[in-house]
Image (cartoon, rainbow, N blue to C red; front, side, top):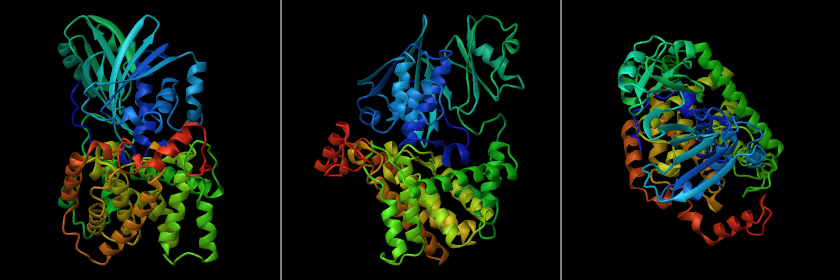
Amino acid sequence: MGAMTTPLPPSIFNDVVGPVMRGPSSSHSAASVRIARMARDLVGGQPDRVLVEFDTEGSLATTHESQGSDMGLFGGLLGWDADDPRLGESAEHLEAAGIEMEIKIARLDDPHPNTYRLTLWRGSEEHQMVAISTGGGMIEVLEIDRAPVSLRGDYDVTLIELEGDAAQCAGALAERSDVDVAAPAGDAMVAVQARRALADEDLAGLPGLRRVRRMAAVLPVRSRAGMSVPFLHAGQMVETADPESRPLSAFALEYECARGGLGEAEVMEQMRRILDIVRGGIREGLAGTEYTDRVLPRQSHRFAERLGAGDLHEAGVLNQAILYVTALMEVKSSMGVIVAAPTAGSCATFPATCVAAAEAMDADDDRTLRAMLAAGLIGVFVTTRSSFAAEVGGCQAETGAGAAMAAAALVELSGGSAATALGAASHALQNVLGLICDPVANRVEAPCLGRNITGAANAIASANIALSGFLHLIPLDEVLDAHREVSKSMARELRCTALGGLSVTPTSRAIEAELAAGCGGGSCGTC
């Protein structure tokens, strides 16, 4: 397998606050759509037959069906996006389209737990792709037709097959102003990454040219040659300007403008679209969701009724956050549109808490958007030093990151400095180191709902103690380094494999069996 390479700087909208999607898990449902979209382009359109292989020792061997990898793959092979309303029925559409599909579990010794091996046939042609889901819907294609590549979906890709020297051709193409990356893929192919795919006329006269294939970008923010960002880590950020005199959102705007080549107004407008989707999801959840194939029934209305009647313990903004968290999680579990922020499994901790706090403080949209940007920058720091993927680091990776992001957002809403926001994020992450991922019945619902709710409580507490001057002691960068090392030490059974913790309790197994038999919606006796 091709070796993973150092990624380009993360984007708030690519890597942290997104994708906009349907399905239970961003690292399964959304990532698989993106991988399959690129695989579809690789063969020039809809394939006739597809073989997908998962490693017996990886996460996908036990979770590919229940957490949406299959659903996403089928939709991507059909050319759909991650928020397509038909995704829940993608298997039926795949069969109707005449695509033969085989999923095989085998001992492959893949180093990454979220590895997809695809073999596709279209007409007389056969092609292979190896790709990984790296968390939060992000991907990397590692091999094409057994040649090593590094494609992350942030460029249009032109694959040029040659009879001549691929290295020499790559060197010549790299000198073109419209090419950002040109790298040999084995001896006979060059992978060109650019802001647009090269047209036939762009390649006229290229010696030894045999064939050209094109793969479209799948990420919303494109990369570009010569791109630079002002910092990548919290420690680097505080060296660029006084964090006591500036809010974290100012650093976030500076960062994302540099990363995306965007103006401040464009960044704010992109975040406004995200906020609109979050608010719409909250409204949809509170109005009521129905979906047969899920573990938990609708419950947010019960909390709303008790809260309105004054029957619950006084908890201020926390109770409103619990209500909004539950509403968003119910939308996710009913295949509604959500924003993975930073993942689908933790899609409610940060956005629901931020919206609840903004409403409680009567904050205007500009203030709320800046709080969301501040949270996004904390996510950038997480992904540059550790991971969002539960398959890599358990639930400390997902709701832990979500709580750290939410804590920073709340500090921003309260007018706190960047230094205070970093302290709040550090507090929040310290509180969850070692938190495992053990989905009940192999679904991203329980204990995910409770962990998103406790993530909200963690965020509120962490923001308040940081605003009060409590010492976080360990700088955020060092906490993230510990976060990464704890992930490495965590047993495979405790990292979203449904092989440990609550996943293997008798009740969990019973619910899983009932769902497999077609009993869902929380109507079973043990649900």
